Length: 202
Image (cartoon, rainbow, N blue to C red; front, side):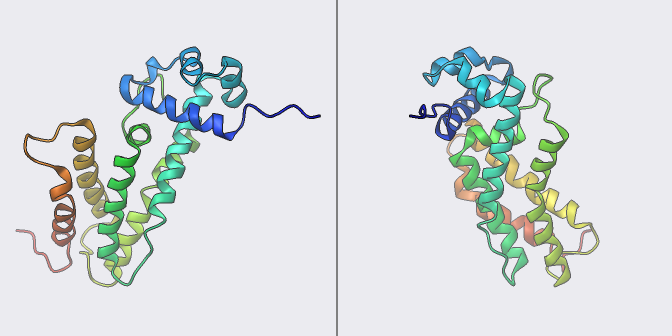
């Protein structure tokens, strides 16, 4: 009889999510494979079997965060209203971040000398930005966004707005009595309107 496989995908996912929580709370330097194994009630052998070493674990962590983020953005279908698509992508962005704050931090915040993504992983993170650029470019083609700037620049402004508000929310740094969720969509709409083709900067 074949021995049951104990180092399976379920264990891999538990290790990844626990590792993400540790990095989110205390940074990549605090991640210990021995402690991680103890927290998940498995052996360090299992961790090494699944990820090779700490670098392999962090690499897999970033890959998983990017994969889930891309999958969430992919649920936003293209419509004849690209400007509306930009807003919907922004809403999906926040939903992912709030539901997965640990993985969100891995994608956009947790960078130290001990955690430098490989070129391949960095490319995967950058690809998460592409749906937004594509939506802006489509918006330019139908006259919804100004053509005075590259689509990448407009997309960057939209992303920075979403990222700033979401980061404040996740970090618990919202001003007293103010909730990001209450102004988030309105703010996104204001940014989109501000980059409209009929706006004249003075």
